[in-house]
Length: 512
Image (cartoon, rainbow, N blue to C red; front, side):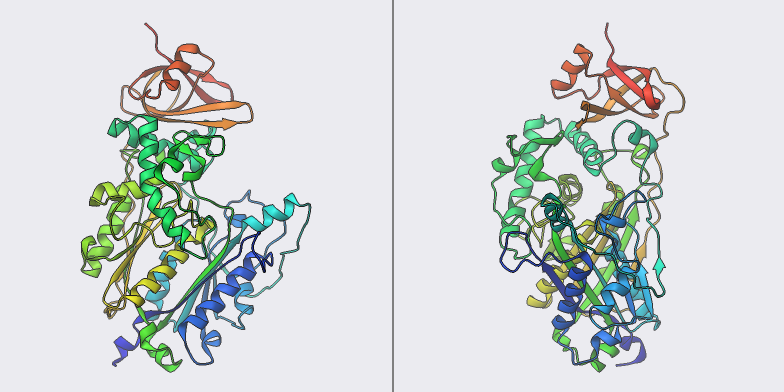
């Protein structure tokens, strides 16, 4: 092979680990322990001779939930240098240690970045790893137990910060949309309005989308909830499957109570040969494309994400493939709408014989923080190895349908001679102005109702007469307004606005 092909980056090893609090052999491992175990599994998966761990020159750690926001807490403590804490568990001492930003897209984007470094000859072996032990943390705290998961590792660290710029909107936060569930519920109801469906019909559609996911999870040994369920099971609102934010029943949202870790190792073709990695373990990265949305208040259509579509289209184009030619799909599924968004654009069905998930999806396999897509990539690598010549697509979503990364993988060779298979697309431009100053009326675009300590809160997004977007809280103490929202379809209704405490805006049904 010539010098260029020798620098071709290839995935040589993937690893996944998990444990459940109720299973035999449960060890209550820390996140760093789980991530280290996953990286050790990736080393074993590569089938290399001795020396692979020591050859890792770059290690990127996926940021835990406990360090994903400035106000996040780590009740049992945390490592001061996560990538080096993971590295020392496998006897590695990488020249470069990276702590990535927050977001479910970060792992796949980092693989693309590190693959480019390899293609340019600036790295030979790079790895990413991450884990969450939220299930263990909660179980121990409920039992009144504690652990010391703090580690002082020291050493160089490239800490990239939280990466939360343009993610949270102050207006939405003021009106109660402080969680991912609330944001996605707003988008989901916007799509429901566009389709003209009732809440019950829309929940049934979510159930039909996700029922096949549960069957994949039921067969996955790493799944946190390995139980096959019917569409009716998922859609029916019961005491156990209560509404967490309209229209979502509890079982259809991402499950963060997991103990899961995953890792991926990428090497140059030259170094892979030198280390003795068999070529039947090599998986080529054909493209990774990423694109971001503006803040939710500035989006043209709250029911769609054009950035996600553009990322998938760009990755497919660079790989020289159509979606019909991709055999294996994992569409990020923290909630239904990121899946629906791509299914709507590409004509995918919930009953597509390929399936829309490789893991079982975040509500059923589990949502290990920012690291879910590392698991999806590990599954994609396993699938294309088992079916040489096939291609896999992994979609990775971050924030509030804010940032998307699409990756294409295959055992078929990819030409990296121009080091141009990682594509950073320009941010989707803001399309709607936010209203400034006191407003008098809005027309409802979308809404959700979430529970707070003081009772239900109805969050509303709408437009004024100038087309500017406004956030408000519907006054559920006002009988006509409450009746409007309880009737299931306030879309298009005119609401009269007035100032409320805390800088909020209160909305009532315009009467007369």
